[in-house]
Image (cartoon, rainbow over all chains, first blue to last red; front, side, top):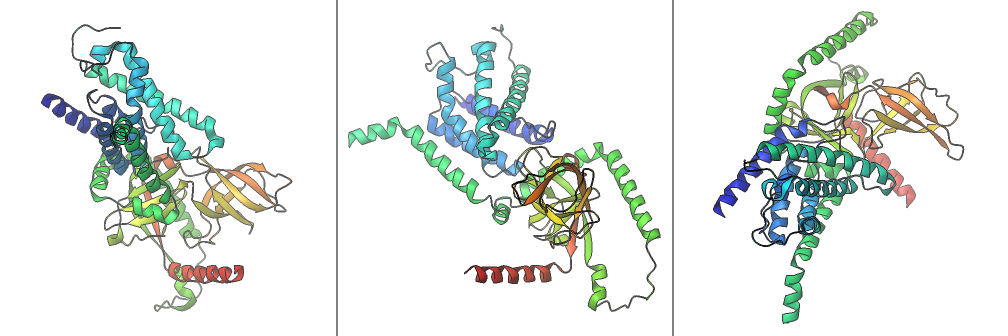
Amino acid sequence: MNNDIVLNILRFLGLMALQVLFVNNINLFGLVTPSVFVLFILLLPHAIKPTGLMLIAMFTGFTQDLFQGTLRLNMFCAVFLAFSRPYILSIITDKKMDDEFKISLQEQGFRWTVLYLILSFFLYHMVYFTVEIWNFQNILYIIFKSVYSGLFSVVFSLILLYTFYKGKDRKY
Amino acid sequence: MNNILFLLSKYAAFIVLVLLEVINLSILFNNNEFHQAAYINQANHFTNSIQEKISNTKAYFNLTHVNDSVTQFNAELLKQIYNAPKPSIPLPHDSTGPLASLNQYQFIPARVINNSTSSSRNYIYINRGTADGVEKDMGVINENGPVGVVVNSTEHYAVIMSFLHKQSFISAKVKNTNYFGELSWDGKSNKIADLKEIPKHVKVRKGDTIITSGHSSYFPENIDIGIITKFVNESQNRYAEAQVILFNDFSNLNYVYVIKNAEQKNIQALEKIEESLNKDQDE
């Protein structure tokens, strides 16, 4: 458990640094900035209670808002994602989710991870752009932007996950 | 009693969600107005110093591009200096009265340390603040045209509301005419803006250049903004609309100039009087 806390704090700092120092400066075609820091919320241990998860997510979003100069937008979306995380997990998992259940690429395999990332990131960006643009005549534009940003976030996250992949045999 | 506690614990997550999101949303929507935006975008010293270090690093990769544009800008200025008519009357040292307007505008150079274009409410952060004379409500330009308006400044940093912001407006006119309209951004492509409220009888064509009108205290007159690419003339509206391609590349801003307008206070005082007069009329 102690080990978990240290690991997550390190992951938080690492992902924040990556997002602020590198990803925020990519600005692909003036349209997309992938939100890789969300991966931190997605990878938090399964054992954390929903309320705690939301509070952690709120802090994460707030930190990112400070750097991006957005008005509490990331905070809103992060809390929403944290709330929906248990539901996303229960949709995509066939196995029983007991205390042994671990959210990781090693344990759950490639297909599960990709599905998890796609659903979560699409939800995140969908909420983000809906609140940001706040105009339902632009619904197609919102979907277009969400799919586009979500796609880049998923690819980026997968690259990260495989970079820190710890041995054993891979399950596909 | 037990039932209530049971219900509360069962829906605890949902209740917390609603609480947190209501707090977030109220902050989000209360701060969308032009001036309140300044409050939330306080030029935060900690994050800005980090952003400045990042932009220091990024600046190296842009040096060639920056040099090119500076040289071009210098050439343009040289042209203006040597082609300007010589003043026939020597200027008095004590420049009061109408001649004071000769030095009406001063320019404070600044470097962009953080800039976004992908949002529908974009802000630009620069590395000059009140210590350098940058204050709220000053216009900001670069060599390609208007950039935005300062909404807040601390000692060493300032926040600019980019033209690429839903609530940004520039008073603009078609070059060589005196008809003006309002230039705004629709929140999509960072190259395209809409010129609204052009009177219908004005002959505007594709390819006409749009310049600032000088009707606001933010920007001086005759700064090039963009070129008209499309003209919408719907018969039921009183005014026509045009689509404008901007000269400025907002995704690649390096150096900007903050405009210090000596007459700004006077103009704003007059605007305030006008506003209150309008209010009286309404009542």
